[in-house]
Amino acid sequence: MYKENLNIESVVEEPLGLFPNDVGIKPFLKWAGGKTQLLSHLHKYAPIAFNKYIEPFIGGGAMFFSLNAENSIISDSNEELVITYQQIQSNVDQVISHLRTFRNEEEFYYEIRQLNPIDLELSFRAARLIYLNKTCFNGLYRVNKKGHFNVPYGKGNGNFLHEEVLQNANEFLQNTIIQLGDYLTVLNQRAEPGDFVFLDPPYYPVGKHSDFKRYTKEFFYHEDQVRLKEEFDRLVNLGCYVLLTNSDHEVILDLYSEYEIKIIETKRMISSNAKTRTGKDIIVIGHND
Image (cartoon, rainbow, N blue to C red; front, side, top):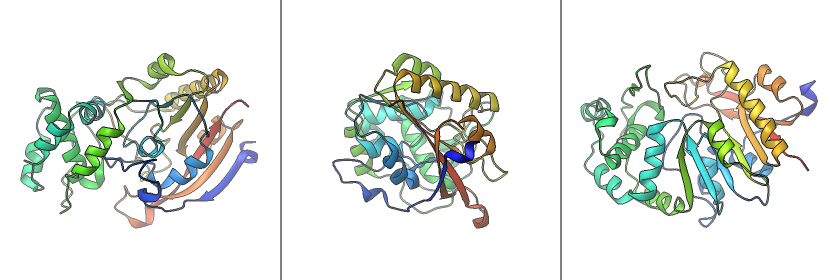
């Protein structure tokens, strides 16, 4: 049974500043389901040496930004997110210039939200996503079936422009390949023996308050989780080092029962009800020694 491979650990809450400046930096986006509070555990099970790092569900990139790998490939199926990373990589000064003209006000927020990103110049498009991410409710990225961003204003007074963080991200991304695409396509094109692949997919839902997965127009269904498990197996057999995160659900535990699984007690910040802000993440460890 899968329970033989389980190991329950408590999350160690540490600031992003845990890592030295020459090792990792702070992500420039807040992303639902982000891995900041799992970093100490993920680093524990990451390989000491590897050829290149691949993360095909990049989200806010907490793991990516904490590693400082020499060669990295990051990707996502979310076009807005990928364009934003590409613009921070190649055009950060213009993105910052746009953000300087924005205001953290409810009326202005909805003016920016209603803009169709397809009609926008790319650096403004990136600035729009960063602004919405920093000023919307709980940093959610959620779109409706038409692909329109629909998260309400967060009514916060915080600063949405952190120039130093954006400039650091720009430097950090210089040797990174940023690709728009489905994770299966990216991994089939890019993964090679000796690579380190980190898989942080939309989680298997465990309750009505647990749907903290990153949102795109496409959802991640049960059959997608099964397909991901098949890809996990392929990567391990190929000779990659693979770490996967997901929810502590019996379906997921059964899927990965032949692998070593760590269960981490975590906190959820996506729920408005404090009583539901607890949960368990799992880390699946896959490699052939």
